[in-house]
Length: 157
Image (cartoon, rainbow, N blue to C red; front, side, top):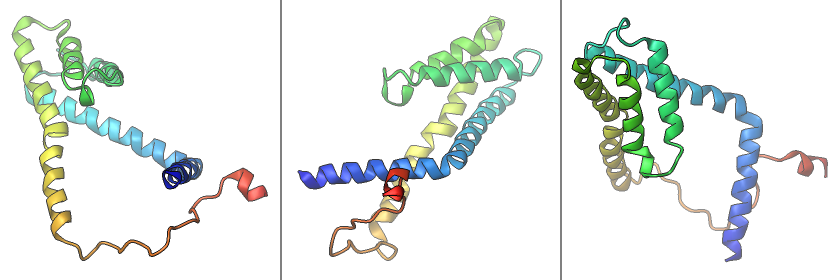
């Protein structure tokens, strides 16, 4: 049990060191990821025939941002259903009822491209990882005690 506690402390120390030294890079790539996801949603909307005059990119971004915040509430795994409801409700508000089906289709395409493809692709790569053992490293004979990052209090001691 103490190994687990030591592992948790080591993980925490490594995480603090990583964030301390690479927070700018982590923040940049997190923002880049979110912007890329938004553009997939916007492209799905435009591909389904919802143009800028019907639904502005600014409104779509506001709905996307709010729906991403909704997904932080852990009602369902990954926000499935809750986030979709947020997308559909927000994007269809102010649109004529004849456009609602296109918005729902765009949201479903968006979710398929950003969520539905990743799961089978992940399962496929996991199967490859299970089969190919040539790139794996053997477990060390003794536990590793040093960490890659040193926090400030340890550096001064």
